[in-house]
Image (cartoon, rainbow, N blue to C red; front, side):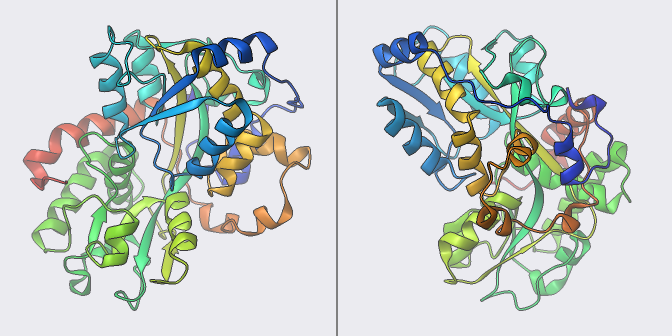
Amino acid sequence: MISHMRRLLSLSTAMVMASTAIAAAEPSAELIAAAKAEGTLTTIALPHDWCGYGAVIEGFKAKYGLTVNELNPDAGSGDEIEAIKANKDNKGDQAPDVIDVGLSFGPSAKAEGLIQAYKVSTWDSIPDTAKDADGFWYGDYYGVMAFEVNKDLVKESPKDWADLLKPEFANMVALAGDPRTANQAISGVFAAGLSSAGGDVAKSGEAGLAFFKELNAKGNFVPVIGKSAPLAQGTTPIILRWDYNALADRDTLAGNPPVDVVIPASGVVAGVYVQAISAYAPHPNAAKLWMEYLYSDEGQLGWLKGYCHPIRFNDLAKNNKIPKELLDKLPPAAAYEKAVFPTLAEQEAYKETITKGWDTVVGANVQ
């Protein structure tokens, strides 16, 4: 659980928590055979440009020969949980085997009996502070909330959250999801609030809603889910999203338009995502094999290539498993020194404040 983390951590400090165990384990032949007998893995909410998932999925298919049935790539964490609930008795194509959700959704899904325990072969190299002791959920990667900016339309990028309120950013600023259901969007609202509340986490949920109420009233907020296409088209020239998504867009768009990725001067929020297997998974062995792949050196480096810091980063680095050219493409650690890692209790509090208060305080229906 993240509750034992100090609130202020640099990225390097965060990863020092990893075990020193060398992760060389492989999935058993029995598991591989059972997964191949099932033949299919059903995923949900894994857009190919998120965290390098396109290449990760292809790598899994190539290694094990399974079919991957991909549901609703643009779903949020809340949608993933609802998909499990809605398909408890359904073993068909609409029932997800696995989920990748914001940290706060892990314990709540466990409490509701929606996920099952499984410890991957590399379990010991996952930091204790980022996994459920019983194996129901485990951290996979993290990043920080950043500004992704279309430089063709924004000549001077915003440097901090307060800058987004300036008149020159009229009709430009978007969240990367629905703040009533999507963890990435909830984190964006919280980060804005953390900045305007002077770093007071307890006040940041309400402060974030107040910030977006003002941003909307000024006409700067665009109620459209921000991603690479509307960014490039100019519909959402400034997107508030995880740094790894923004950096991936920068590479994919390749200068058309040029993209600036800004870590704000304050309100720097780190987000940890977690993996879990549905308690009702139609393909439980394929799900376990998927987890084994994600937490292998190959899978972890696949996320890093997508600019996500994988949860086993320190273990990989210590064992010289990370190519230098890959490390060189990542943002410098100095930009992350003010990063705040909210505890689970803090996340649950601001998540409730933001999801329940968005409609009444801000009133902008994000689509």
